[in-house]
Amino acid sequence: MLAATAAAINAVGGVNGDNPTEITRTDVDEVVRVLLNNNAYTVLDNIEGEDRFGTAPVRDAYFALASSNLTGDLDAVAGFIHKNNYPSPMNALRSEWGSIGNLRFLVSSIGSITPNGSALGNTVYNIFCVGMEAYACIEQDAYSAQFIYRPPIYDSPLALNASVGYKFAEVPRILNDAWVINLRVTRA
Amino acid sequence: MAYDTIIEQGRFVSTGADVTLNLRQGVDWIRVYNTTALAQGAADLAYEFYWQRGMATTGQLGLFWTKLGAVASDPITVGQFAAGAGFVLVDSSIVTPSIANALTAITAANPPVVTTAVALPGVGSIVRFEDLDNQPQIAGIDFTVTAAGGGTFTIGNINLTNSTASTAGFWRLIPFDAMFYPRKRYITWVENSVNPKVYMSVTHGFTVGQKVRLVFPGGPAVWENYAALDGVQATIIAINVARAGNEPTNGGVANNIQLDIDTSTFGVWNVFGAANNEAYPASTAVPFSPAQIVPMGEDTGFALTAGVDILADATRNTAITGITLVGGAAGPAGAAADIIYWVAGKSFAVNN
Image (tube, rainbow over the protein chains, first blue to last red):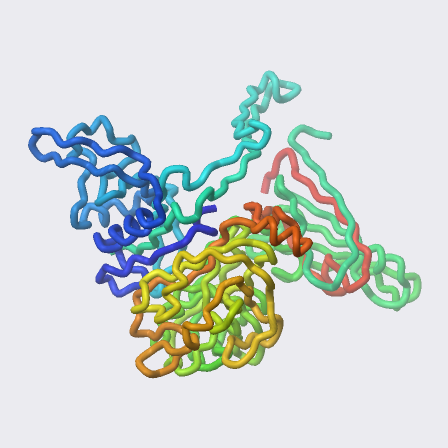
């Protein structure tokens, strides 16, 4: 839903010759600037600095939802703080990779991509940078999603076959389009 | 009904065009009857069609039975479709582009014409360009095909006059539009006017009363005076208004929306490029972010005044799974005015 409807900014600060380019600090700063100017609240609080080797305080941050293919590129961005360099790594989320400026990056193997979406025909990775309450999933009649497994004894006359399936009745919806920006990037 | 077997059936009157059946659970077999062809006794027409999963490893072949109405006693023959001529499975949530097809030219014109030696995309389909030697500013952007024939196709929703024509590059067919409606679209032209028309590269699908936000990333360095529209909210007060002047020429219904804003002081749109008066940012602007129209809701008051649906902005997942019946007298979707019945199902097990 976000890939189809959210406003997008191409990364333009990189040097890979594509459009969009690979992610750079200037692109992150641009997204943060847009979200701040649109009065988006950050989702996470800051992590206070502590007197520990190799750590750095972490700013309050928006979420940046990205593909796990971008981890190497994120490491190379100026100002990147890996989550194990947080003053208190326990505050990092399981899927978190690190932070740049006011973005904290959560990565997933099913992060959004646009195949052949760049000017040179390369895969474009959609990084959804979201503020507080930028979007929601509306559950119709509290139905939500159900994953249903029925063992063979209940599911077939001779107890031969099990069945598994899912059903859901919910609608994703952007609540405020100004609080979600799709930062489109390619790989370095 | 056997375990895990789901059967659906239906009827439609043919228009002669392809018909896609929305079969949420999927389809393992389908049988189609053209009762108009069956009832007549004057011509040789296919009247029954069948396909089941596994019938072909390339394409979706199928069988058809033809009533030889022009022959005494109306004997029946059976034949097999060529790939893509009878049934085509559909899953519109999969939008993986086609392979890269070489092109040898994109004209610097209004409308731009693309020359390619491979099979042409159909009118109304969506294409994306890449690796263009002289017009990289439109690479990576989706365009609706507005005409096709004679080894060329046209992308009539943009004016590329005064750019440098491309002589090499590639295009890919985008099989389906993005899943969720209403969709973000890329802007290709903004009229210099009170209540301006805004043109987009792909057929927009917006309706009167919807609210949109204009997004012009990059500021005046890319978008000249029109950068002032970045973040501006507007209501759509009309759609597909007749084109004029240098606005994109698609040869049909103009692909624009008219907004309740004022750009009359911005100067004309086509001033991009170094004194070149291009109608889209020049190749030297690359890399940059295309300007966009982003759907953001509905102006309920305006919608009520205009007598249109106040929920037209509702987010909808438009993706489907199903099967396309190819149209025409020889196809399962029939010729215009034919009455078609169909029954389709899922099997308990498929052993191919």
